[in-house]
Length: 106
Image (cartoon, rainbow, N blue to C red; front, top):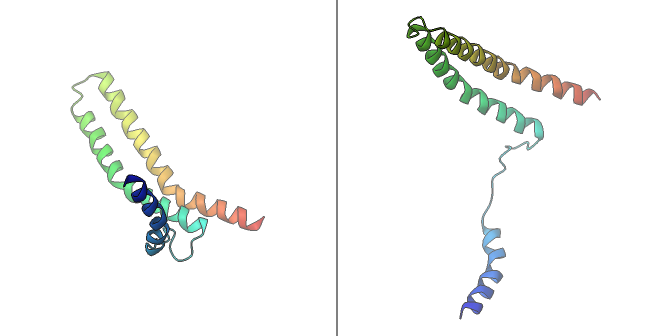
């Protein structure tokens, strides 16, 4: 009984898979640059709220240091690294455009 069920399922799997249509995740054009643009856009949308939260946390650390040098250093590093990460995300579109132009001119 089990063998016949396995055989029937193996025969029917290709027909069932053909009935399912998968949408192209790259969109209508489907090229690499569209895919990379979508990744950069997603990271930009994801990074803005995280950076805002990290700036608030860094500011909170500065306010609540109570003169402790260690906490001031933590707050400074947090704000600096958040700013650097945000600048990388902001420049990602430009870097991608530069790479695209370099590759297309070769």
